[in-house]
Length: 248
Length: 219
Ligand SMILES: Nc1ncnc2c1ncn2[C@@H]1O[C@H](COP(=O)(O)OP(=O)(O)O)[C@@H](O)[C@H]1O
Ligand SMILES: [Mg+2]
Image 1 (cartoon, chains in turn brown, yellow):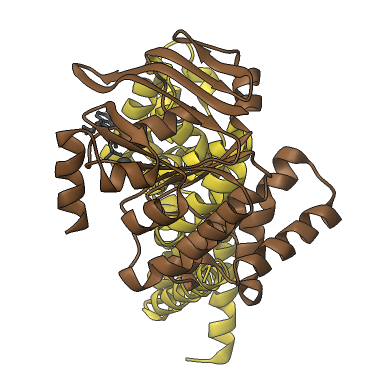
Image 2 (cartoon, each protein chain N blue to C red):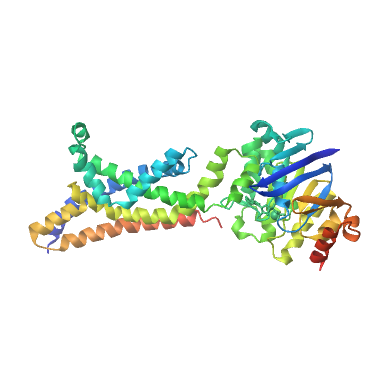
């Protein structure tokens, strides 16, 4: 079942074409790793899906509803409804520093979904347990390590029960010894069949956890396929060159 | 110096201090919200409003507060035709001058606070589905006020001392009574008493703001 359909996505900043005719599908339960050199448009592509960037042409369809069709965006109310199916985890966590861990988790469900307190608390307790931070519920983000912050950010996104979770280099801002704990949580989500798109430099994670890898360069998808194909037998010179550089 | 003499001058001075405190409270309570409104006006997408507000802030910060006070108290009534309607009670006029001036300073402080907030905060709020109002009131403003707190504390202490400018527009306040007693009794004791009263007021403020800063430390 196709959850995300992206076709002929175009985006430019002035004269700079950042995304050129990007087309790909995401099926339910896919874990897609997006790799490619810095500046190739990975973040812009991901951010377009949740309307943090406006695209200039093409279509984005999220589980049957067009966020944007042939460059024409839906009405604001529709956009809000459609993007609410996705959660996003940022490179720099973007936790709310003036709220405790628990408050970070519970704010949006309370304000946006207007769920019952008991249900919200049940879920936050459960998710804190899942990410192994039950004992830090009342801590402020400033008191957490980078790895802990990113795990909280993942839990915060999950609190909204998204159908799809997007990650933009979730471990790039972390000290190397802290990436493992975050990747572990992501791996667990993959095992629970969460649909995920992960922009990452962690080739190990891409190989091991993703069921499809997309290689982007210079605003284009150069090739995509099974991790084994991409990593062991890349078809294009640019892919080979990139992999050689990053697997060194 | 007798206790009786001390008592006889402390009373009017405390009365004057009341005026000082009253002015301080009125100005703080009104200029902070007004300053915040000015901040929003500067950031408005309606350019003429933004420009006008920036000019206003520039003029208010670029000219002496004393000049502004004199203008409101003595200048406005001299304007042809409408001047007669602009004769305000001195204290009211002074309050107005202080509020208009301090609002400009607070506007700059809050603007700085907003600029210090990472754009990731807006992005995370948007992706979580918060609307503009919720993002502003729940995410941005609490952080902005926290960031602005030390600067607001500074500005408040300055305001306590600036209340002495009431002297120049002949509103009887603390300094006025001190000066009167000095002239009358040929003693500098009233100046010391005035200084001590100012110090007590600024000390209380400093303690209050330190407490607020600790209370909202978020760690
Ligand atoms: N707001 C912006 N204004 C101008 N250029 C931008 C902006 N954001 C990104 N870019 C440019 O778009 C290109 C793609 O950026 P990005 O999507 O962040 O790449 P990646 O995430 O793959 O490193 C880069 O050349 C970058 O400089
Ligand atoms: Mg990026």
